[in-house]
Image (tube, rainbow, N blue to C red):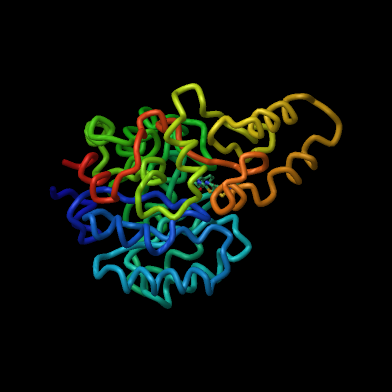
Length: 301
Ligand code: TUI
C-alpha cells in the first residue's frame, strides 16, 4: 500500500510503532521494520550509550529503515538528539515537548523529522520549523497525553498543515486504520498493540495486564500534576488518583516520590505494586500475543 508516509520513509506499510520508553528496543524496532512498517527505538530517559547500542543491534537485525523516539523531557534529550544525527537514523519522532531547536541538525544529517503533536498549534509550529510530517496523537494514547481525542485532533491538524499527518491514539486494528485514513491521515502510529508482540521484551506481567484489560480497566493518573499519563488501572494507579484528588497538603511531593522510576519498575520488573503500566485506551482490543508481522498485517491488510 502506497501513501505519503510509505514514500517519505521508504517502507511498505503506512504504520509506525510508538516510542515506548523502557520497552521499545532494537529487537522490537527491527521486528516491526522487517514486517514492512517503521520500527522505533525509544530513548526515554536512557543514557546515550544504551541508545547507540540498540541502534547498532537493530542494524544487525534489519536492513530496513527504523527510527528513534526522543523524549524531550529527558535530561539526556540533547545528547540523544545529537546521536540521532551522528548515527544518521532514518527518522526521529519526538514526544513530550517542542523539538524545534534540533530540527535543523537532523535535517542536515538527512534524518527525517516527525514530531508527535497533541494540538493544532504545535503542528503548525512544527511545519514552519521544517518537520517532514507530524503525528497527531489523541488523548486515547498510552503514556503522557494531551486533552483532545484522535477523532477531533486528526482532521483539524490535517486541515491546518500541508505536510503529511499520521494518526495515533486508539488504533489497534483495520477499523482504526481505515478510520484514520478517513480523518485525513496518511498512516498510523500504534503503541499499545505492540506491547503484546512476541518480539517485545517487556516483562510478562505487563503483557498480561494489557491483554486482560477491558475498556474500564484503563485510567489517567497525574492530571493534577500537569503531566497526565494513561495506563492500566492497577491498585497503585487508584492510589495515585486518590492522592492527587484528595487535596491533602504535600500531595504533589508524595506523588512525585511514588511515581519516580515507575515505568522502569513496570517494564523491567513487572512490579504491580509500584509500577506504572502505561498503555492506551484501546488495550481492550489486544487479546493475544502475536508476532510483529501478524500485528502489522492485521492493521494494514
Ligand atoms: O510523549 C508521549 N508519551 C509519553 S512520554 C512518556 S515519559 C513521561 N512520563 C511522565 C511525564 C512526562 C513524560 C510517556 N509517554 N507522547 C507524545 C506526546 N507529546 N504527548 C503529549 C506531547 C506533547 C505535550 C506538550 C508534545 C508537545 C508539547 O508541547 C509543549 C511545548 O513546549 O509546546
